[in-house]
Length: 188
Ligand code: SF4
Ligand code: SF4
Image (cartoon, rainbow, N blue to C red; front, side, top):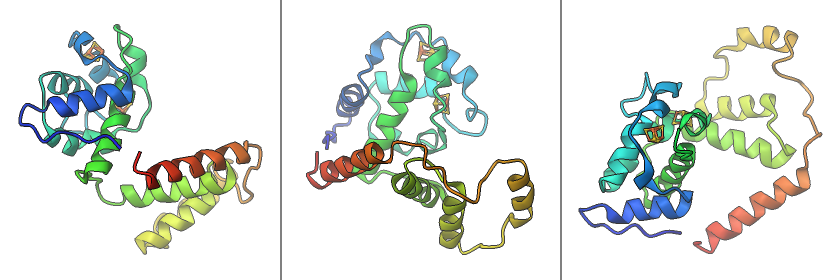
């Protein structure tokens, strides 16, 4: 686990993000190409280029509460578009990790529930299994009948399957989950 210094200058956060993501924040040109391509920039209050700038200028832990930290869908468009080759999506990953570790996490609505349901099915089946994920998510929300009318169409179009796919490398995936849990327990 990385400890972020509670300094007003926010230097600790910048260093922690650079360490986790391997990104040198000082090379950002502020061209905003990352923000122009970001699919969630229109609905979020913050944009990826703004996150980059604020980090570089020494923002403190309040940045971990930015809504983009949890609305980001990890599509990596920002990283692909960056003329400086900056892994902006990696920066977002680092911010999410630090937000959870520091308790600054402000996951909106059912986001944590969805993340948990998604990860559980990946751990169990080696890849996502939509029916199990939807079931776990709906049980968690208590809204079992929401959107059920879409189910037959999705099934017909092959968007979801009744049978899980066992084509993935389940052993490797389980090993990753096990190692992650061990690291978490050891406070690394
Ligand atoms: S695209 Fe790259 S250089 Fe441009 S603002 Fe975003 S991070 Fe900075
Ligand atoms: S990875 Fe996140 S921040 Fe980057 S473009 Fe996709 S949604 Fe936006």
